[in-house]
Image 1 (cartoon, rainbow over the protein chains, first blue to last red):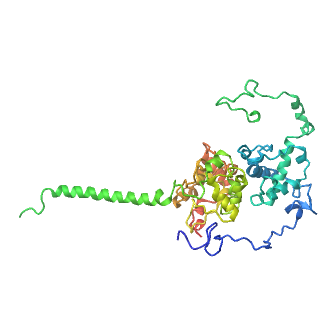
Image 2 (spheres, chains in turn cyan, purple):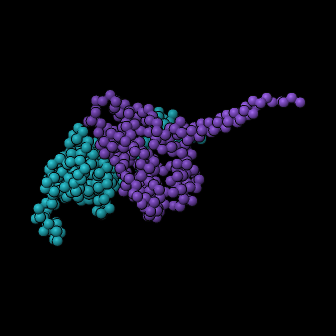
Image 3 (cartoon, each protein chain N blue to C red):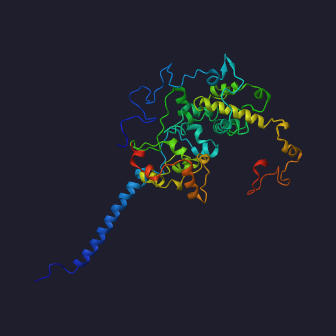
Length: 191
Length: 219
């Protein structure tokens, strides 16, 4: 009763030579609803060249999803701010380039989709871990990250323009020194 | 007529009664310990694994999200044990010569599966689904314990039916907001019962009558 002669996920099989009960799809199989014939969405390319506009609707939900997925799958190396100094890089992995440079600001969105799908340099592909819809959400969020570090002052709403000329409100006596134990910096000024 | 029993018989009867009660109590204690104790449930016991994988290091230390490896946990009954490729995402460069990781490299080279030992093994007559629990606000921690502090994986809870029912009878004791499901540092607020009752409404958790019915889990 506890262990019935049936397959549950990951239960080994003596029937197949590789010992797995999970079987790969026969080559050429197209699952229902997975024809994936929209090249812009599924390949990030149209006619062989990378798409330059997001092929899915850009919504606040997409960006929120993108932030969540970016923080799960990308931030370990690329860091939450996108400068490429994530925890795994600090432990010895090759440092990826920062997103905040002209080459990547000018790269078409299809480039990021392509890199997530196929990998790039030391970066492995994330095709198995990140489904297509989430890849576009991440791409959209990368664009938001890039804007966050490279926004012109004119984008600041008119009623906050004056704030730009205010001196930074940093705790003058504390900032830049090692934090004594028990002192919590406000989030936005953490060194 | 002479007495049938010597005077000492009185004490013998009393002593045997005490012994009888003690023996019955001891047997009951052994039975309960066997039924609910770690000998049967394997609660708190680490298992031999081909690679001594440390969640404490990867989750607690490096800050990886549960879903980096357990990718299907939000959309499937099964959370997903990562394929060897996921290990190699980092270990192609990090600790790439470590003998501890030799089984991972062998598996990647040959395509043979690593044979991990399942730690949370429910009986086959229970149909547990990860996705519905996450959709209704049950945190990973509620069932798996402080995984981010486990150098070797063990089952933190008994996983016995009465343990499941403890929550199914009163979900408000354990539910948390959905954006806190994967937070390993979550602490329950002081008004947990009120929050829990609100989350039950918000996430449309069905009534205890419904979710304690046999066929909810045994179908």
